[in-house]
Length: 239
Image (cartoon, helix red, strand yellow):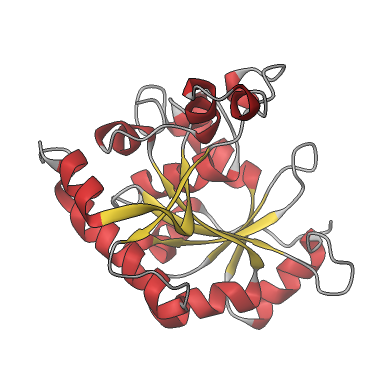
């Protein structure tokens, strides 16, 4: 993939903080997919619609492991292993170590929003972000969350791996690290970019072209990883 010079992290952080989309291409040795990402603070029904149109994959909401713990939420593989149903626990691929397992948690929506429209999903995300604005000091956060939201629902929640980039270099951890260095509440919206011709993930070259056409920043995973490895030893991504 002959990509142009990558934008610097100062520019990327500023754009992300200000509510712009980011296209992030995963390493060829991993999924080799590009996700469109948006900080939850800036969600609107129009932006959810744009993510569906530009991406087309599963719309997910990623939260940091610290926030997941405060909300008393677990990974779905852990939930399945804890059930008393052998048929459900057997679905978990225990041959994978925990760092290789999916970051998927529950599906959820606001209790007053049972449908799956762009407006309803935007409202669910906005409500979650509003609830979590003081997540570091709100001792009732878990009970507030469980009374406000329900599962199953119209959005897939992801929980970043403990340590974020220290333990895993997936889209979930990369986008949450970007939230942290952008001084945002660690909630991010993500959607894989699919190809309506091949019915697979859209290639990096085509995603870069799509980004250019829509004035969106396109970056490779190494741009974030190099910044992380150069600037952080015990900072964001290490908690």
